[in-house]
Length: 151
Image (tube, rainbow, N blue to C red; front, side):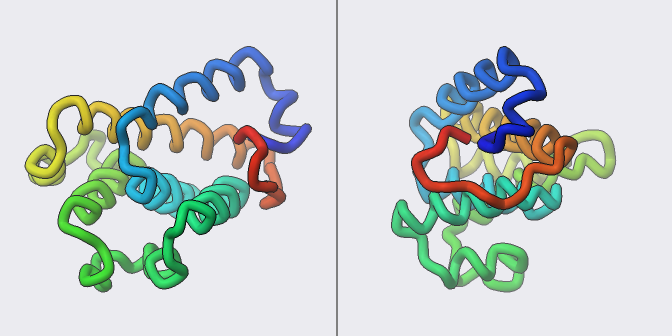
């Protein structure tokens, strides 16, 4: 949460979230991390996080094509690896939780592409971005991220 309005919610919680974010990202591919964070933020309508993670993804070398097709990744599968598709499916399942749980087939699909440690990091990253989204949407942080800010 980069804006002053967001930082006022709870500085202690914000700091804990920053630490949890760093811990969740350890060992995850940077492009995968960005795709997951953008996709969850799109689902949650978090303008601040969409802006932030697209800017960070582009700085990390992500292509415009993969970013703008992310909303329709299931129809644009040729642009994403099977591992990325499994991560995106898991992202959507965890973010929406329509049935109150992650379907077994979605979890098993992800487990085929990630070892236990990686899967734990991925699930943690998805959980943390969802929490950030909810905080930013609640305080209506505008999409004003400047690269290099701590988000």
